[in-house]
Length: 288
Image (cartoon, rainbow, N blue to C red; front, side, top):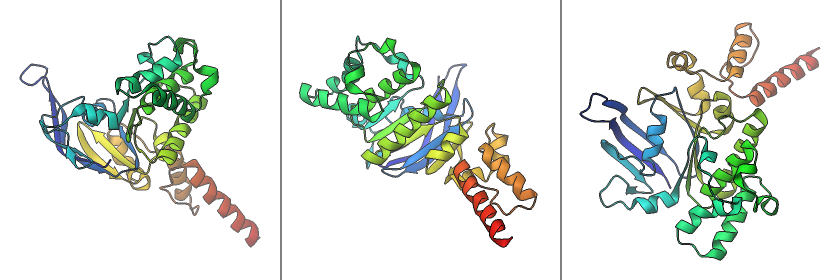
């Protein structure tokens, strides 16, 4: 499920006083099985972009090619695309509505016309994939759960449809640090086990630095930076110009490097910085 976007443009409310150019000639590619991050200030075009990837929005111009098929074509079967590209909106728990967790997670697979035995298997598997005990939670009302549990149930409902691409729009918004880490660790585990393509939209540079392999940076509807985390986060001044920042540890590493300490100023994870500092301490200890 590779994704290729070519010269994508989207204009809202064409011809009205509220006409807004939301996407400007965006071109990018995402390899099958990749884990990528999409970042940008509020209003940069992130949400508009991801809603094109499963056909919720139709571009004003440009192409989106998924697995070799142009989904912007008049012949595109968008229902088939949406089975393969799962989109988890921000605060997905607001979309929970069934009497029990089991029924809620089963809603999507049932709509795909899957047999009841297969649906039952998918519900159990998807709940366990997001770290919930199926037997313990299956009969509970979704509205009795904690915020983090609701978020997991909502994500499980998308996973149960077995998408080949999983797009998550701010999946940790509003969660405490523990809940945030648990959700993201489960997503990383799911990516490793299933080999699905994951697109993570986030305002947290720390989360992006920790989990993704490649970053796309949006600003004013345009793609302004793209590359591996080390490359993107090396453009600190550019990121700050568009209302973003590098991870905090990058600023610390740069400050240490400016003081003459032998450390890479482009380090972007706490783990990487800690490993480098421990190596320096070991060298100093051996030298003395």
